[in-house]
Length: 417
Image (cartoon, one colour):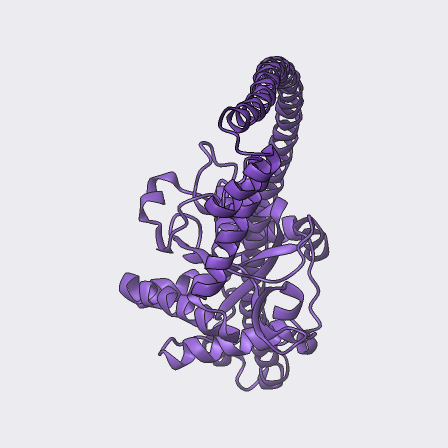
């Protein structure tokens, strides 16, 4: 019986692009020898990312109002791998294999109310060992803030909260695929098996792998030739019956038992060899990921250097431009000040001229009034002026006349209100 397999991996920002290089098959030369380039065209996406994983994440953050304090080492994505044994996929065929991964995708969309929008990419690989799906998602939890408002928050710690969170994932995943008609078993719990995770090299040493492989290649599961008991009995039925019953038959039974034990041992050794082969494959994939991470680290260093270089150039350009603008401003300020001073002097000159005209007008009017009074014997000049102002409501003093007209306007405005 085959097992329903799901694995989860938490990833920081520095780690996710290495996954993208592998998942999207962007490397020109694959260090992972298990990848068959002639079958890569069979790979397909259930949900395709258009950009790199980091750019997809930045776009996702911009489009969604998400809470959470993210640091450089924060977990911003998780990768799940869904698969089973090759024998299972060979048994169900291509059409059911596609349905199997479709159900895996639906499962994670609904798991912990995650939502499809939080899935960045889901790609099925058919060119590398047993069929499997890489699914990248942002660990979003739907919760409330301090005042009780509903919010969405990026927090891998809360999404995988609890020591048994992965056990619950395995249970839920197994129950889902089982309910969809896939004949799979759920693996035994770690608590029951007491299994520990070893590296490939450690596991080889523990299991004496190299020697095991040699034995498997050389072992022959054949029954040894034993005497035909019927022929023996013809010669010794009477004389050696005791030897036949007490020695030959027990030896024959023992040989058969040893043969059965050898069959069981061979089966166990074959299973062990398969585990090692699988572990070697994952070791190669891990080495590839580490190499990709190292390459990504070097790329980030190069980009940081280029950024600092460009930033220094921008600072220098900004300083130069600032100085140019300050010089232009000083020059324009000087021109404006010179222009305004010229206009001010011109207005001051015109104002002085108008004052002289007005003063001259006052003198001329007084002389004219005196002349009229003497010419026609009217009397005193002041009396004439007083009567003129009373009868015409007009003051010869322009300042008084303007004040009078302003008061008249205010009075008319009050009456209208």
